Amino acid sequence: MSELALRMVGVNKVFPGVKALDDIHFEVEKGEIHALIGENGAGKSTLIKILAGIYQPDGGEIFIDGKPVKMDNVITARAHGISVIHQELSLAKNMTVAENIFMGKFPSKSKYFVDDSAMLEETAKLLKLIGMEELQPDTPVSRLSVAQQQMVEICRSLSEEIKILVMDEPTASLATAEVERLMDIMRMLKKKGVTIIFISHKLNEIFEICDRITVMRDGQYIGTRVTKELPYEELINMMVGRDIQNVYPPHKTNPGEVLLEANHINSDRVFDASFKLRKGEVLGFYGLMGAGRSELMRALLGIDKSTKESVILDGKKIVINNPTEATKEGIVLAPEDRKYEGLILKQTVGFNITLPILSKIIKGIKLDKKLNDETIENIGKRLRIKTPSYDAKVVNLSGGNQQKVVLAKWLVTNPKVLILDEPTRGIDVGAKQEIYKLIYEIVEMGVGVILISSEMPEVMNLCDRIYVLREGKITGEIAKDEITEQTIMQYAIGGIES
Image (cartoon, rainbow, N blue to C red):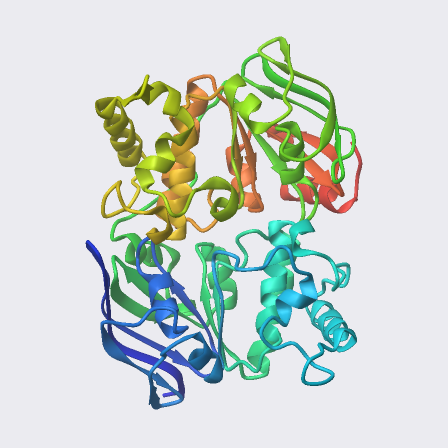
């Protein structure tokens, strides 16, 4: 048996109303890439937060290199060589790339002064290591896309002397080329003896990069298997406790007349973009990291400063200066960054769901409690939101369930146009299938759905048409019967122009 880098034995953790971890056993060998997977709410993130010293276990032991340790706090964990890239980004957006990478460990010239030149130089080396030379070390993080921020998180971990690197959904915001780049980095770290714990819902990545797989379900340990010896279908069954076939369910859409037409949109990151969306259509937007997919939608809704020649909805010209005006017209956005833009984390699940429809459930100064509770209950059951109660705070939910709350709060508005920006980011395979089915239910009602996704199979299987962006420009429009991976990538990397 190989030497163990990490051993967690009989770990338990209880939160109010829910047992998050129940007698978990978890072993990782030195120098391996080990997948830790399970559905939303399985307990993966809780287990990792215990390893990182963020949470204290209610029982159990942790062994690093065969020695028992007590992870009192994050500093203790770092001292043992443990670094975690969390599913939710934790960067200071008002600080630069370099300052975020070296926060808490700034190189110094003397007792009182930071060595800025050394910090910038080391940051440039780290960015080059992961193939992100185009990012400048002195760029404020607030100006970066979510995907670029994810790469900064990776650099921050690489700046430390690490023995065990935990990556919680690191590829969630990355397009195909960036995923390959990250996997190359992981292989390089493995060769250097770094042990990697890889959490992902993208099973194709797990089968490609991981040596072994540990599965958790409902806070319990299900089993550990060698990746190359585990059939795909069996892994799915271990995760969800039931058979799931056809992750992309069979469907038939029938797009109608043009519902939304946006003409000549421009912003700092979008250049002369025009597109049309039909009723009952799933319209995809694809591009590599930084291509401008999210920025195009932000410009359309007036989130970012922009100019638009015209926006026509249902044959009527409308003016959209801000998201509030867009929502009133029936155009809503489930944003990519749910933590900062999609939710009020310190409020309850129910509060977040009904926030956009307060005018409907509050009559005068009185809350229509029956309507409020029925609305929350119905959408909660429909999306299978896992929560102790709808009075629980959103911050305590898993990342996947937080995403479901974002979807729920916009679906209750009965929108005409629903923009989904990375809707399955951080969501398990079972929940993905539910979201896909829900998308088709929505388009059958005549709603137009715009789907932005970094997962090419998702775009190819769900969408009726696809627009491809590169460097803020729409480079191609692909009809359903012309959608192939080659065509998409040619438009995305510059092989052809429409």
